[in-house]
Length: 320
Length: 259
Image (cartoon, helix red, strand yellow):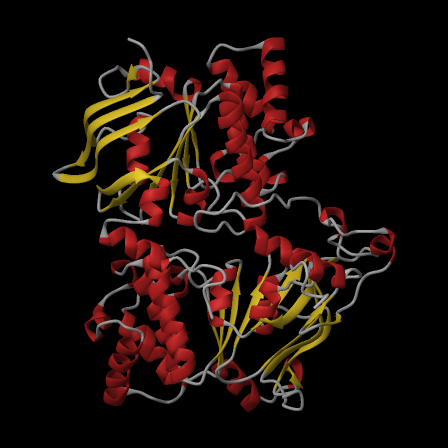
């Protein structure tokens, strides 16, 4: 698996706004086909900036984004076209992603034309695509404002699928939706991943959504990936204190009120761990040395005290 | 009359033209109590809150009985309702930054709010200091502009205004939906502390059923403007009687549900 060339990857990627690095030395390989990868973190952690860089919408400051192993800047025209079609974004608000003046069918036909499909055959594919995302083909004649939020989000997904991508990059795809609508969009994404052999990069602050759709998860804090690993292990035995704090902050049905884990963030460019100011595990070394990702059980974590964090989250596990 | 309940609603109906937007047969809120109102977009939960605050426009028709801290907020004239709003019942909204005037420092915003209710000078300064500390904000926040504070701090500040004005009821409309999970917990702890220490009542409108289940004593489930189920949070959320409540609960993605 590690020999496989990733479809899309961030390699030592740093993205800065002015002088402030927002994404700091991130490595993130994404493979084609049927794998869900979650990117978790709070506002300002850099996850959306990372996604925008992966989509070629922001220039790297250092490092690079690669498509099939080649830097985006070095792609030939044909390769660039392939990149544009195989990696498709789905953003938070389906309302903004659709041209308000265009009927739904025309929006999807426009995407189909990108792969040379026009005329009658395109019209029947439009109907198929709408039905594929659980909408009636008759919606093709509607305009975006005539649809509900959930319907619009499905149209955006149908439009993305029209290009036959290998990877969808979804930034908070369900955050603006009601829970019952959200549940249907999640089912849709689960099904599409299987049927279309589609990779998903899912950016969200909703851990339960990541747990459901993603085999692998990466947690970002202050511009860096602080923990990566199989989603289930990462959430059940977090090795980074921030992952643990995130998990423990989610209210559970009928459970106790979650602990408070607020606090300052040290500057990402600063020496030392950016999380140390709110970290209950922090010691002197955390201020002196920036922790790098290292292997801890099934995960990688950038924490000097990862073993302690694992133990604290699961008393007794390490001793057995 | 003696004020047993902070909020008392009977047969509240809100209509717009000939459409019924919200209908609540019965709702009471006692001191220190929290009643959660859950439902999806268009269920009428926000409209119901706004009706209690007298904040619905003239094109809405409100009927029935609704008392807030003993004042009939439907029958009374606008001046009387305006006096109740803020000083007895305060609204805390989803987007805290958007609801604060961006051109004013937070301290100025709070001074103005107090001045509107006749509190000025040293008394105002004392109240501001006390209110900020009650929500866990440092006093220095008063010198900042809304864009210079985080979403969580802005939300705490919104609650601090309610505290400074001496509100007895907080009507919170999705107070944590726009916040990160780690910050959410802090805001909820503040609301819980105000209930426990000051006996504040909390009307919590939210689509986050897990959050409501950890905070609320009682729950109303609304759909298409109607209350489909109500009762103690424990009974409604652990053993829902209505299909829609069950559907809502099943739709919530929960951690640890997979495998």
